[in-house]
Amino acid sequence: MAIGKVAAVGVSLILVVGVVIGVVASVGYFGHKNGDSSSGAKSDDTHMSAGMKAVTTICGPTEYKEACIRTLSPVAANNGSTNPKDLVKAAIQVALDEVQKAVEHSMSLANDDKIINNNATLKEALGDCKEYLEYAIDDLQDAVSMVVNNDLHNMNDLAPELQNWLSAVLSFKETCLDGLDVKPELKSAMLNNGITNATEFTTNALGIVGEITEILKTFNIPINMLKGTSNSRRLLAENVDADGYPTWFKASDRKLLAVKNNGGVKPNAVVAQDGSGQFKTIAAALAAYPKNNVNNARYVIYVKAGIYDEYITITKDQHNIFMYGDGPTKTIVTGRKNTGLDGIKTDKSASFAVIGSDFICRSMGFRNTAGPEGHQAVALRVQSDRSAFFNCRIDGYQDTLYVQAHRQFYRNCIISGTIDFIFGDSATLIQNSLIIVRKPMDNQLNTITAHGRTKASSTTGLVIQNCQIVPEKQLFPVRFKIKSYLGRPWKEYSRTVFMECAIGDFINSDGWYPWSGDFAINTLYYAEYANSGPGANTNRRVRWKGFHVIRDRREALKFTATEFIRGQYWLKSTGVPFMLGLTH
Image 1: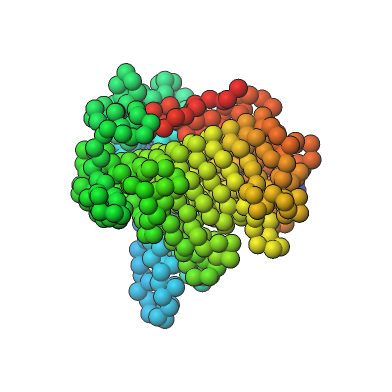
Image 2: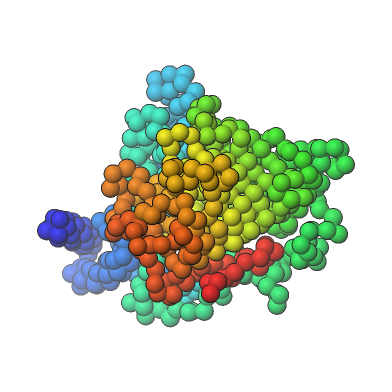
């Protein structure tokens, strides 16, 4: 294995050197055209050598170096640029271009009668793929804008934002591909027309941004090491007052977030099934959301007690919504869509879905009542960046909570299920909550988590901190007969950490369960730190290369709200209680 790895590295280096030589040679060739003097050609060669040196430096930490050098060399060759800002922008731009190509190809395939042949399932899969790729385009455009509109010396602060968006691009790409499993030929066609290149280029951009501080040092560019000082238009920390609230918050917003029961403040919309509010459905209240909310004004929806049997989606244009109810067992959104009985795709089975950024929810319940027979049946799906849920209840069986993408925070919540019931590819922190493992069907076992990170450079992961892991009443008598685990790896670089939790005795001593054979057990990152309870003993845990028992407090701090989701810059504005560090 070691010899093969060395050989592979050698081949990779040969390819990279070949690309560099080829580019320099072609530049030299074009430099001598049209009767250029030898002295002029020499000057051009010297100039372009500096450009190529900049390219190779920028591409140093990337996974796909050949692709990086091939795509960034024209920037140095055509513009004579050695400016790392131009190269970082170009690294993201090429990914954006490829995703746009993939969107166009998905539309072409969807309109090809020979391929679709009146198959509604295939047409829907391509439509969903296009939708997720368009979300990826939004994030890539934000990333390009951030690089263009900021100084490089602020990159130490900007890097986590860029990593967040680029990681989400990989999440959306993977969701697109998962949906195309219905027809392998379609999946192959999409991979060959944009998605493979987009994956490589996005991964390269993540590699560059992840090492940007060291890269810029080689260019002798001073780095602002104070975080939270950039002018990023999307950082909530950009305009905050002495109390930590955004300056655009009105006095009513501050009052609303400061009181426990949201009392005494008039919301923008009241939903009540008995007609005592402006609207009888949540969907109607959302339809009244102001169009073109350019001032990013908070839109507050109060949902009175009741069981709301409606499927809700907070769209990407409906950002900065604060929704609260009368309690997680009083204000409930319910649905029953599922994969097993209805044949509905997992992501489309959600009773409640949140896409628009900065969504805050308090004192509500979300459930999917399909039961274990429905297999994948999502109660709550979230891809909203900087979203926060407090005092909420999320109930289902398999795939209950889909933490799909971006940064998410859950506090004082109850989450229940059986198989993979907290899953997705976001950077999610669940804090001070109750995780209830339910009784599955016969011959099934329980896995609490299934994280879906696909690249080591992605900053996503799932952290369960200071939570209680318990069995439900129906599971308790048979808790040793039915095996239950902390999680299993959905994708190759799955990352999950349980820390400072109280773990019940029903968790199997192995702790973690394989997805299939030895898939991902060497590349995943699973860790446990300072847990307590009879199920927390790590002496008999799996012996996987990717499993870790964290003993160094400094390592554990990487997964706290401060380091993992940059909570110090946005959690205060949510009004949700939070802990930035470790409990002890």
